[in-house]
Structures are given as C-alpha cells and as structure tokens.
Image (cartoon, rainbow, N blue to C red; front, side, top):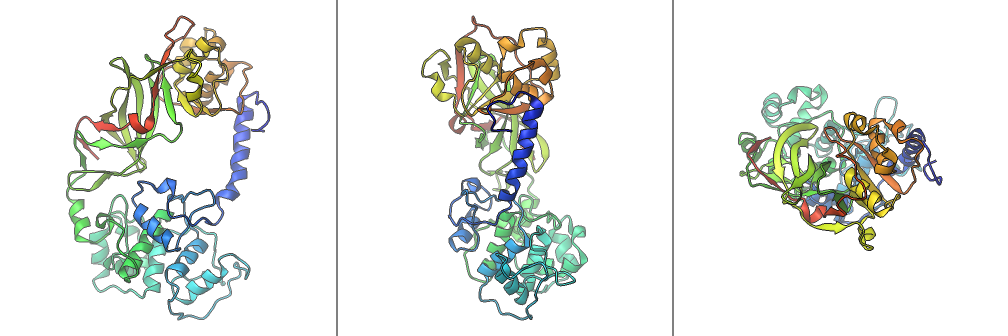
Length: 461
C-alpha cells in the first residue's frame, strides 16, 4: 500500500499508485460545489474573465477543493444545471418528459426537466437522457441555438465554409444551428478561431465561453471573451491572415507547479518542463502561444551559474522548435549549512545535486515532498553500472530509475512515502559521480522569479 511504512520494490510502488488513482476517480467525477469567484487554476486562462463573471452570477461553480478544472469535460446533467441558472425565465414550450435514467431525487432532476421543456436540450429514443455522458462542443452550440430560437439568415454552407477549416466535420443535423450560432457570435474557438472541433468533448472553459457569448447576445452580461476567438467576426478573419510569429525579445512568463524551488549542481544539466503562465501574443495582438502550453528545455551551466534553455514549445500536442532562455541564476547555497534543509521541502533536485547533497551531508532521506528530476537514460545507467551506485546517488537514484525501468540496478533499496519521484527525460545524462571532495555549493532556482524566458530568435508558430 502507498501509505505503508516502506515499499520495497518498484512494482509495489506502481501497484500502489494505480490503487490510489482508482480510489480518487469517484472524487474527480463529483458535481461542482464551490462557488468562489477566483480559482487558482484559471489564473491566466484565456477564459478567466468569463469564468469569473459566470461564477459571480452563480451560473457556474468550482469544486470543493477550490479548483475550477477548466480543461475537464462537462456532463449533460452539469450542462443542464448551467443552462437552468443562465436562463431561468426561458419559456416552456414542450411537455415534460420522464426520463428512465433520471430519478426524481437525482441532483439535476429539476434542471434536466426545465431545460428539456424550454427547448435547450432533448433526450434520446426511449426516453433516455444520459445525464452522466460528457457533452461534445457541437451539442452545446446546438442546444443554445435551439433554446434561444436562433435560425440562420445567410446560406448555411457559405457561413460554415468561410468560418471553419473543419466545416466538413459538422454533423448534418447540426449545420443549420451552428450557422445560426456563428451569426450570433456564440461560437468561440481557442486558440485557433477557424477550427471548430465540433465532435470534441467540450471543456468547462469552453462551455463557460459559449454561455458568456449567449448571455452577451441576449443583453444579460457584458462581453468578456476576446473577439479574436469568436468565429465569423471581422477581427477573427483578419487575425487568421496575419500569421503567427513570435519575435526575438518577446517575454514568456512561465511557472513550475511541481516544486517551489529547483536545485542543481553548478556543473549539472537537468531536463525541465515549464508551463506558459500567460498568453503570448504577436505584434498584431494575436495569441500565438496560449497559456498552459509546455516549454521543454533544460537547466545547464552558464557563466558561473545555471540557465534554463528552451528547445521546443508544445502547443495543443504540437511540438515547435523554440530558442528562448532565462537569465543566468547565480544564487548558491552550501549544502553543509545547517539552515540548508529548510529550502529542501518541496524542492526539485537535479540528480547530481541530489547526489552531492547526500554525499556531502549524509542526508539519505533528503526531505519530505522532495522531487528528484529524472535524468537517467539507458546509456547513462550503462556508463555507471560498474560503480557503487548505492553510495553515489543512493535512494535518489530510484526516482530516475523508475522512469526507465532500471530498478534492478538499485538492488534492495527502500522507497519511502516521503519521497516523490518523476520519470526520466530523453537526452539527459547523469553527469558523473559525486564524492566527498566535490564542491559543496548548489544553485537554487526560484521558478516564480528566475524562469521568465526571452525569445532569442524569431519563431513561427
């Protein structure tokens, strides 16, 4: 078990993690409960203003843990609840339906009954509603167009073909409704305004954006979504033709949520993945690198310190070469300093730094909630397998070894629940053996202040 005093094998740890994940699944599927107006996981999100507005109106809410989870899908029952709160005075034009899969004591029973009578939602044959089914984007837009009685005024095929590069993916039954929704500025596509992704599951941020646009169109709220993401507008059409280039000198604000600090040895190269904290816009104001994208690179020695150097940015799963870097960080701490232990809690350690700390201070456990950056490849392991692995990287090696399946090299070492490990990263090497004669100083990186990046050469996204 994950919470037993010791886990003595990699396989046991993996099994424990799997068990824990399964146990948490029902909690992650719980209906939203919290109604706070500010959520830590929507700061810098493209739909932040919209989410804040809807939360203040009581139309949407967060979860008991204080998060909003903007990327999570939305069930049909959750969407019915949102619609009921957004349009409480909608006229009932249909007779009530008793759905066989929605009991009268179901938490969303009233919302489902109301939104089907007002024409926003419909059930499936056999009086089935499927309340827990995740809803795709196309169904959200069709529901809004239907409930608000929107019909297209222009030629449907022309509206769709000129607005969406993937118009052919729109189901036949939905084409007129999508065209009407587009004319009414309800369709929000982020980050590419011309890509509808009609059959993709709608995220909580996307549903919020659709609702904000619908409420804006009906005069109930002020606009909160940037026009560059609204399909069919002149601004969005212009932005499509202006290209997506990030110029040299552009600043990229990043965050590293996995740890409060990053600690590396002065001579160490350690792979690192950062998250873009705020949208990066080009000279025309178009978002070219959306918040939430991943910047892949490494901490590496530079001018007497350490510097993060980016090699690529990952946007919606697409990898793009990126030449960007941070300033050189030169702050160091002596691992023998009695106060050094206070900065280890919640820190991410490069493998060489971890080895140095343990070899020089004798600290085998390091600290609770310490993350060991995985930097071992098969080649690096092979180069070191004839050396005394236990005395050089000790328990910290298990974290890196776990990522590449080399648990056999660690022997009968012990993994304790206090240690958190991440997998190995491609292209990195261990960096050699650290002994008691090594430099006792390590470089301490504060991600919030030290890892703002500057683009070094023009990059086309």
